[in-house]
Amino acid sequence: MSASSHSEAPGLRLQLGDLDTALAAVFTDAAPNGSINLDPDKIEHDLARLVLTLIEFLRRLLELQAIRRMEANELSEDEEERVGLALMRAAAQVSRLARELGVDPRELNLQLGPLGRLL
Image 1 (cartoon, rainbow, N blue to C red):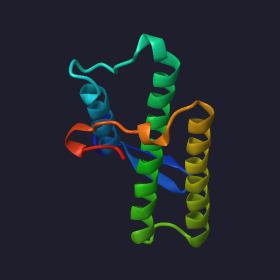
Image 2: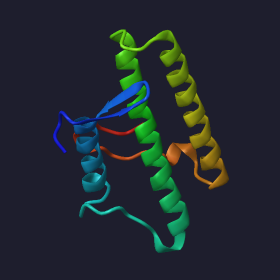
Image 3: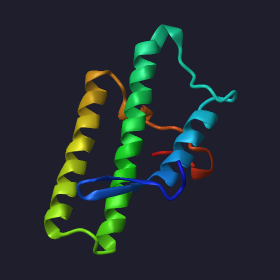
Image 4: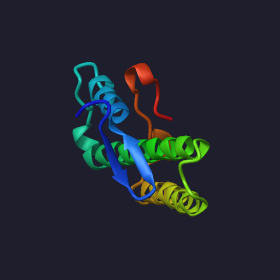
């Protein structure tokens, strides 16, 4: 995928070049050898944490993209309202799932290489 590629959903356009770079950093910097560290004794917890972290990461990317589009006056008031509500609901669901899966929200973090820490 090229840096100029984009995917469109109603009301949002995500620049995939930035996403590709960030996701590559997640998987290359997660552990010294480029793998994700998973403890066999806590595999369910570690996988839940990883999945929730990636969901939160994507939610925040969408939030930043929505803010950029709002500041550029690219969204109607109705679109702004729908996007804002969807992002608030997504944040609430991530928190709910974290509680249900026994994941402390403070654990939802990854080192993103040159981008720094996710949260």
